[in-house]
Length: 450
Image (tube, rainbow, N blue to C red; front, side, top):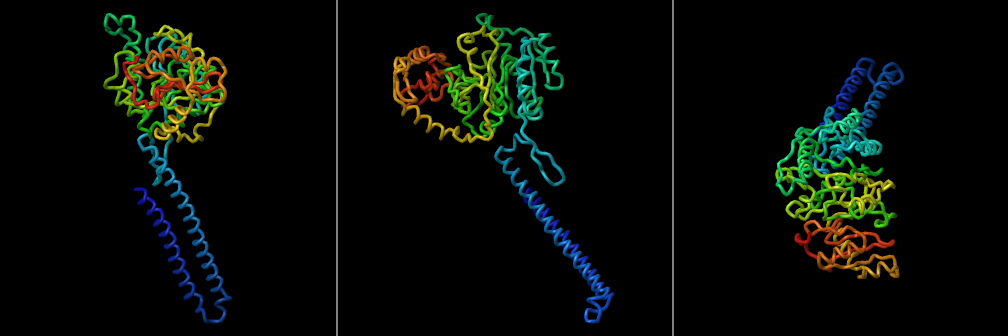
């Protein structure tokens, strides 16, 4: 179709010039007949010569106009080819187009922000930061989906008017749960709300991707830049299934403050500000769980050996101590998470190092070429050199012991440690990179390690 359109443009330009040339030569012929033959005295210097000169000037004007038109058409074709390459790279399914005469112009990718809300009036803190840092309302429309029917929270959300879209979960009824799960009613309602809200985003609003943010999250200044840059990475790499803004071990002192641009692959689903594509939702929605949806996501049957991208320094910070989890981990870990404050131009950064084959080769080489040390060595402060160093584990018990002693999160979900990749947990300790790693030759996770 594009080639046909190119040919039509060029043919049209040639026809335009050809018609004008024929017309000029016709007039030139008439001028010769009407004003004397060329061999007659006075033709070149008389009235006939003036008219001939005028016609020749007109011919030159048309030729110049033709050259200008060809140059203009060439620029248009270059732009079309450039946009076509962009469409091909992005697969077309997430790029809309609009028709203007015979030229198809690309329309930028739109990634909505879905804010999951319930009964926290402090959702205002979350929304204020999203609106403060949002670069474009057109590129990042905000949808707040509210469960619970809490009037005060609804009023806070409504106060933002046209800056966002407010939708409300219609089913507020209690859910019949097993007797042993009565105290987990809240988790069942959250799972129901997620299913409804994501169906709204993908089916009712017809978006092809979404960034999910809970109502107790504050975002970093480069939150939108981060997801904009990683959208094409997620879309093109089938070994990935999400991009997260969160580092589970991202507390102050446990991350490298000098590397806010550093990104990792992780086998652990982090959540807490994450992006997924519609294709993944179409896969997950038919079997969406009744409760505990985030742990369900971490099961091998859902993860299917796919990974997420996470940052060294988190692009979200949770301020919600109270919730259905009753502040689990909050006082010990989550409230100390470092939120990035230095904007990183991710869209201008080469992210090819995240490609699985290259990443795995470099990651394994760095981890297992690092000297093996003990926890005592690390804590003594007597180690020389900048690192990195590795400490090794061989069982869930030894991992938990090492993690607790070194101050990182020690729980495992389906055998995967938080922030882990290929069984390795990377963090900063006393100014040096440290890897908690299984022995070299690691092959797969053991789901019974939980």
